[in-house]
Length: 131
Image (cartoon, rainbow, N blue to C red; front, side):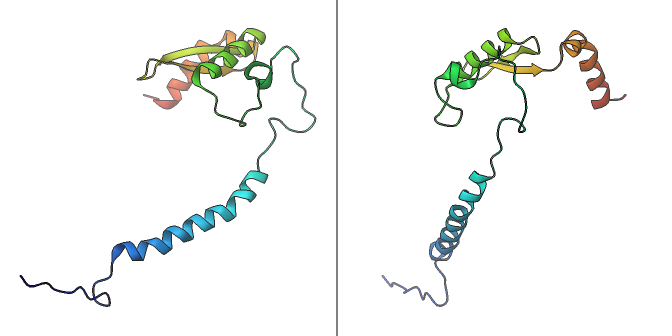
């Protein structure tokens, strides 16, 4: 059996060539993270007023948004509490996920727009397909 030696100067090893690029991308990402984190905006503009009847995420979840993972049932619980507290929020069940979880949309608008939601949907459909 004849063995042929692979000459690295002629046939480059693909793994050796991609490692430096992965390290470069990783290092670049680490350098960007502090800037991206500091660019986060508050929930609302400074001086905004809030309806005291609408619960904060902390009051329902027990922690600030982003402090830890929030499971699906807790997200739904928060949306349900907000919808109960505010006439401007209506939950619409769109279906179920492949895991059987409820898939909802929170429709947030004025009470006047909620009263004419069917017309708004029809207008949006007409814009999407004007035939």
